[in-house]
Amino acid sequence: MFSLPDIQTFKESNPEIALKRSLKLLDPPALDSIREFVKSNHTKSGGFADKAGKPDLYYTLFGYYLTEALELAELFPSVRKYVEQEIIQGNIKGVHLHCAAILSVRLGITAFPPGYFRKKIRKSLSTQTKQQPAYSYFLNLLSSWYLHDYWGIFLTGRKLKKMNENSSLPAPVTAALLVLQKSFNRPVSELEKNLMSYYSVPGGFKATKTVPVPDLLSTAVALYALGFARYDLRIIKPDCLNYIDSLFLEGGFGSNPLDPDPDIEYTFYGLLALGSLTK
Image (cartoon, rainbow, N blue to C red; front, side):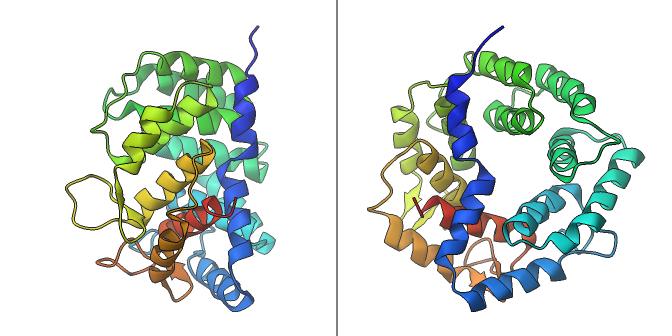
């Protein structure tokens, strides 16, 4: 019915590939400490812990990505059991629906095949809030890709046509919009310029232009999006590497210098940022 040749870019530059590339920049002791940190955040339930130490589907998605990249396959059975139980138990909505969909596919949970989630994801696309739609559309693209739902991808692209670019969007939302526009082979030069306006010496990106310090989430998604769009990162690469390294502590990554305690989410973003600089 339709073709999506431009989605090939996403196939070649998805987050899993970026995470695996990051390992090339780490020496064996650092890799071992990250593996231990990831395992220490894997709870008895099989899920990965949030900042309060409780298992959560959102953090479990980050934990799964890290587990796969670091080849900790022994954790997969318990993660699979946790995800399956979470799907069985509840009315999963919002970001947790996307997390459950991706995890279900990647972990091979046959009780909830791709078709189960395709309908739910498409329905969520039609009812999504107008607040920060770029982020929601990015989640739809990501979920639809893993679900092999090419009609869902097509619907996301059609929704994207109705969006207006806005230079005041937060950096993570601008990054999501840049990935979307590049995936559908649309102009990205203005979005690249907007995203670079959040860059803050020495080496990080701010979430908004008014916050005092850059953070690792904004830095990671900005670098990933710019790399995805094939923007030349060579000039800022040394400072970015130093900034990312400054947030590494006890096997994990923290959010920013004012919040240095590491967790699973920011450890994912730390490796995503490194992997985005290895091209």
